[in-house]
Image (cartoon, rainbow, N blue to C red; front, top):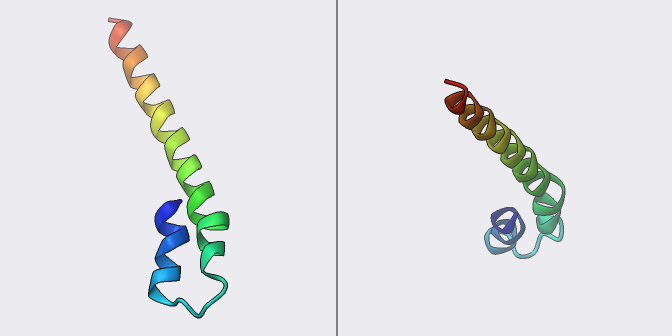
Length: 51
């Protein structure tokens, strides 16, 4: 989220849509990626304990 929010502000400071990238794209994308990653790790751990 922080990279998507601050990155465009640093690259093009005169563009006022910079923070929208972090709020609407990279923030939710990070949530989805984190959810998928966490579910995959949880599934992997439970499959290891089933042996």
